[in-house]
Amino acid sequence: MTTTESTDRAGTSDPAGAVAPGRVYIDRFDMSIGPWLHLADERRRLANPRYDHITVTPRGATLGAEISGIDLTTDLSDAVIDEIARALADYKVVFLRDQAVTSAQHVAFARRFGALEIHPFITGNEEHPELVRFEKGADTGGFENGWHHDVTWREVPSMGAILHAVQVPPTGGDTLFADMGAAYDGLTEEWKERIEGLHAIHDYTLAFAHQVPDDQKAEMREKYPLVRHPVVRTHPVTGRKLLYVNGYFTSHIEGMEADESRETIMHLIAQAAILEYQYRLTWENDTIVFWDNASVQHYAASDYYPDIRIMERASIVGTRPA
Image 1 (cartoon, rainbow, N blue to C red):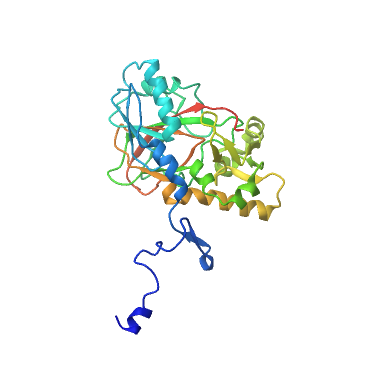
Image 2 (image 1 turned 45 degrees about the horizontal axis):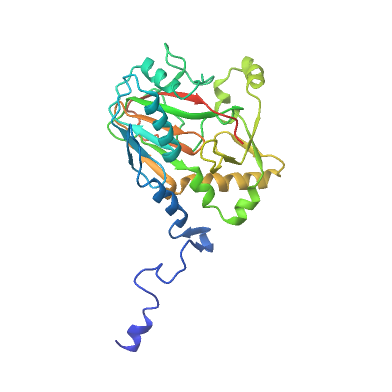
């Protein structure tokens, strides 16, 4: 090798080979690159599921698993329900294919996990008000295409939601989920210290004000006042720390100046966009997905216009975030 050739090569064949494990920050564009090493322990923990009554197949890195071997149109035993609940706590999002349930069966299955909500701002199934019906097509648009937890404007938000694909388009319409435990763990120690003990104010009007007639605004505000939730909540089953702010319903952080509050919320909600924290589900007719509303945020991709997409959702009452 000539002298010229030797000076043209300053590193190894792998750009990360000579770099300490972890992320590398690029100051110019306020971005970082490199592996998210903190995901490894959770990936290992979830790699070998052990269940007696259901088959669980992991599909994502730290979230997302397919359940098979059961039929939701039948009367499931308590043992099966208990294992579904355990799989949900572990994998945060679980789904089943080819479950041609009726609306009544959907509601009955959801009730096995707790009391059900009735959504005050979204139209329900005519016979079963516990089911929110999302029916989109050429004449009806949607605005689900943003990261959010459901109904954090409630004093007691949903524990989880069970969504049934009644009719899906031939392409598009996927739903993405982001692991908010991984998002918290991936924060720098400085950010963790900065948000420790903080509370955020959540407000339904940020997303639903346009759906409330003027003559009902005072009544709805009395029913659904501003609520205060921790910025970092603890999962009631696993004890894991989770980021709990979102761009749909979080108004501001209590006690912060407006600019600092906005900067903090924007940084925290941006964590959901990290691909390594996500699982993306492609729907088929009669797919049923059950997600943990504390552990994940979700994003319904609105890319199928003008095709028809019909979904029904049952939401299970949770516990007050702490």
